[in-house]
Each structure stands twice: as structure tokens, then as C-alpha cells.
Image 1 (tube, rainbow, N blue to C red):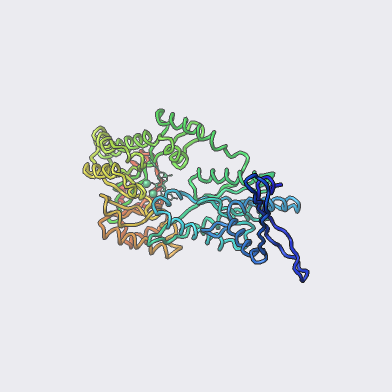
Image 2 (image 1 turned 90 degrees about the vertical axis):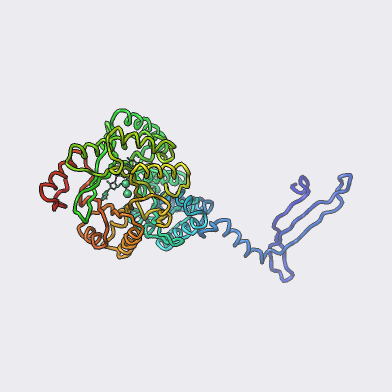
Length: 500
Ligand code: C2E
Ligand code: MG
Ligand code: MG
């Protein structure tokens, strides 16, 4: 009937060779009509399919796999998961689905460009293949989303697996001469505990993954029925945060930096906290992202800047000592054409000399190539404000571009300090960063110093300042004042003992 209505038909027919062997043939039939629309001919084309069967398998492979990483693609994944849930149901075993989403991939993609981002994704895929040689299913769903399905794991085993994958992905990747540290957020759902079918299983792993992202990334979360439904919660959070900014629920804590050569505390970092009326004290990871998304980061950032300058001014004028205060910046603040002017106003109002204010930027801000950002940085430098690069080593990590900006210091990310004594690799990185930074006249600050051994190593490397729990956790201003007074009484020799 297709032949009659469309004048053509094609399909597979089974033919028989003279030897009696049956073989598949592809038959295309077309109708030829004359000018009166009467059928004059049937034309048929036959093609032997035995050889093309092999190409067909290749074609199917191609349509089922992602050409970049050779992993199963979404369509094969959906199909395999349907089968896996059906088998699990009939045989009574469980499935664990891990939804893996790289953190900050959009940023990496924007800064590295597509070619390097592709190379990065291939490396991630290879690591997953290597870590999971017998995975029941391993697939890539979209740009930076991967999924793993394992049969019959108990919850602690699923936990171990997630832990192992996070670790594996966190190994540094060298791309185009730069070292990158990648992290991921993993959401885990389990069949049949959390889901009745494959669709639900996927959705719930995704929801758990969003929760992992919301908790700052680089972690895994299991699905549970009391996970907040993401959208409703965000809207609520936004409204609460708006109120928090005007109703003085935001506080600033201060974490001291120890200057190694003098053994003096010469600076502090201002870190915002939210004293939430019902949820207690919330760390920035709970609300900075939403502040960024909603634009609330502008009033929030302005408030923190004002409070920090006010406090530094009080330390300067009332004692015990002058301290440089460092304030974390959001790129949105630097995109405001009037930002440098606002900073100047705040300094004047709070009577703080510009050189006692430091603004912490991230590498991505310097790579923005926006004229407004560049103008702001120049204007701030002219004011006498110091600029530093935070979390150095986790982003683009190239010292070359720093030359173009009036940067005063680099803060080596906590990730490198963390494993200093375990991985000689990291000590090589830290050593290299310190040497290169010094050759460019930049000061080096190490973040997240927790152990004496780390401090000792950083001292031998000529690191200028250290910040971390070993010196002190971030504390409210009055506590920091006490800490400084106690150090002064004791001739500044006190270290770990000064930890409140
Ligand atoms: P950051 O600027 O890299 O701040 C350092 C973070 O490391 C702080 O976390 C600090 O409490 C933590 N930390 C310091 N020493 C140690 C240590 O020895 N061990 C460990 N495990 N952690 C240590 P916090 O306060 O939760 O802040 C997280 C991030 O939130 C900051 O990272 C910064 O990027 C952002 N942030 C904080 N305050 C503000 C703000 O006012 N504005 C903006 N835009 N971002 C902010
Ligand atoms: Mg910082
Ligand atoms: Mg940092």
C-alpha cells in the first residue's frame, strides 16, 4: 500500500541462492507512471545485504555511542537501563545509579575553548573507564554529564564507589601546559528502594546530584524523599536572603593570615556568614551561588565590603594593630562601571587607608577580557587598593596572564596544601608556584594550612603568608581582637595554642 500511495517501497526480502542458502536482500521498488497517471512500469533494485550487515553493526554502534568519548550515549543508556531494571525486578537484585556532573564545566569550556574542553572530556571518560572496567552501564548523557549503573551494590559499597570516582577525577589534568583540577557532583539513586521504574531512577539521581551541587560540589549525595524539591526551595531562599541583607542577618568573620618572616598577623580575610533565624549559622556555600544568580550578590558584596572596612578601620584606630582586610569579590561587582568609585566612597566613609584593603579575585575574572573589569582594576590600583588572586591552581593556572594586571599576591588553593605531605606531586606544584610568583614579584599566601608539617614545608619554600585552621578558624571580630592581644602579650610566639 505504501507502494500505491507513495509510488515507492523499500524493505528487506529473503532470497534463496541456488545452493539453497537463504540470504537477505534489500529491495527498492518504484512505480513509473505516464502523463495520464497510469502505471507503466515497476522498477526494482536489489542489493545483497550480507556484506552490509557488518557495516550496519558499525552504524548501530555509531548511533549508540558518543563519537567523542566512545561511551554509550543517551539513547543506548535509556535502552540499557530499561533492560537492567526489568532484569533486576525479575531476579530481585538492586541497582545503583550514579549521576556524575562536572563542576564549573561551563566556565572551563569558556576559558579553555572547545578543543581543550573536548580533550578534557575524553580524559574524564578514560578515567571512568579505567576506574570501572566492569561497569554494568557507563554512558555520557550530555556535555559534562556521565552516568554509571552497577548491579547489586549495598549502600556502603555505592558510597565507596562514589568516593573512589571523586578521587580519581580530582587527579590533576595537564592540558596545553596548564594543570587543571576537576571536581564533580554525584547523585545516587537506588532501585528498587528509591524508584519504581527507570525514569524515576534517573530523575531521582539527578535530584540528588543537584543537591550535591547545591552543597558546593565535589561530593556525592544519595536520593532521599526529604530532599528539598529544588525549585520551590530556591525561590524561598531568594526571598529569605533578600530579607537577610536588609535585616542584618549577615555577619562577617575574620580569619588571620600569618606573615612567616615576621611571625606577625598582618592581615585577615573577611568571610561572610548568614545567621539564619531558624537554620542557624550558614556558610557561604549555602547562599553565594543563589546570590550570584539573582543579582543579590551586589547588595550583599557591598554590605560585606562596608562591614569589613569599618572593622579594619576600628582595628587601625583603636587597636590592637593595623591589619589589612581582604574581601572576596564576585565578578558581577567588577562589572559595575561605578565599582571603583563605590570602593573609594566606602574607604572615605570608614576612614580606612586604601592600602589596608585587599580585594580577592579569581582567575576567571581576570580572563573576562571585559573593558569594564579592566578599568575597575586599574582604578582600584590607582586608589592604592591591593589585588590578589584567590584559589590559585584550580582554574586556568597560568601565570602568564597575571602580568597584564596589577596583582599583588596569589593564594594557593587549599587543595594543594591539603595533600602536601602525602603527594610529592603537590609539593612540586607548590614549589613551582612559589618560585614563579616570586620571579614576578608576587607575594604567595597558602590557604587551608592545618598541620605543622605543611607549615614547615611552606616555610622552606619561602611562602610569604599562611592562612588556615592551624593559625585560627574564621572568628567574629571580638575574638580576633583577643587573639591578637594574647599574641602580643606572649611575644607572638604562640601558634596552634592560639586557636580558639
Ligand atoms: P575562599 O575565599 O577560598 O575562603 C577560604 C575558605 O576556606 C573559607 O571557607 C575558610 O573558612 C576555609 N578555610 C580556611 N582555612 C581552612 C583550613 O585550614 N581547612 C579547611 N578545611 N578550610 C579552611 P568559607 O568561609 O566557607 O568560604 C567559602 C567561600 O565563599 C570563600 O572561599 C569565598 O570564595 C566565598 N565567600 C566568602 N565570603 C564571601 C563574600 O563576602 N563575597 C563573596 N563573593 N564570596 C565570599
Ligand atoms: Mg578568599
Ligand atoms: Mg580561596
